[in-house]
Length: 47
Image (cartoon, rainbow, N blue to C red):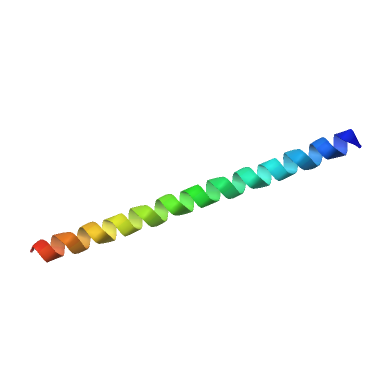
């Protein structure tokens, strides 16, 4: 019983870590794209 509990906890922890990493990478990619788009618009407006 204890071994199965530890196994499930490890599985849940791995899933949680994967979700955190995926969300973090997605946010970083989205923010970088948005920042690039804003900087491009600003450069075009200056011209």
